[in-house]
Every structure is written in C-alpha cells, then in structure tokens.
Image (tube, rainbow, N blue to C red):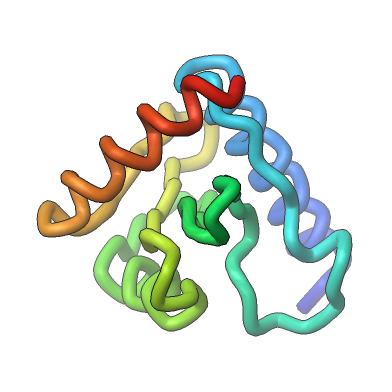
Length: 116
C-alpha cells in the first residue's frame, strides 16, 4: 500500500470519527494507532460492557458496499455490531449495518447517551 493511500485512509478514519462525535455524539477510537495489525476494525465505539460498534471506514470514488460490509463483519467481535462508514471522494458519509442489529444498536446508543 502506498503512502498516499495510507494517508488517505488515515484522513478518512479521522473524518469518520469526527462525524460520529459531532453528529451522533459517539466518541470513537482509531484502532490502527494502537495496533499495526490489519485484523481489527478501523474505529471502535466502545461501551462499558465490551460491546459497542466496530466501524470499517472506506473513502473511494467507486463504492463497493457489500464486500466492505463483509470485511466489517469479519473484523468485529461477536459482542460488537459491525458498521460500515463509507463515502465517495468529497461526498457525504453513509452508514451501513444489518437491520437485524437495529435493536441492539439502539440499546447501545441509548446506554452511551447516559455515559456521555
């Protein structure tokens, strides 16, 4: 992976993290800054029970939602809800997750509101 590609990925992760914080009031942590392994999610929104959201971040001109979301599923732990945040270059953020996870997502989000 070229340096330009890594820098673009890092900028995308920081932008996604800011969007989660500013729009949803969800603080997130970049995973790569703690581990050089390429096996975990790009961002995590942890909760106090070890659950939360595992977020895969992609910024590309052409979107490939299904394979990227599958990558988010592979990188999430069983206790985490996999989420894909994607956007086209200079576009708006999209958030993708399974509809079957909506109840858990709302429960976690509401619990995080009390913590924040």
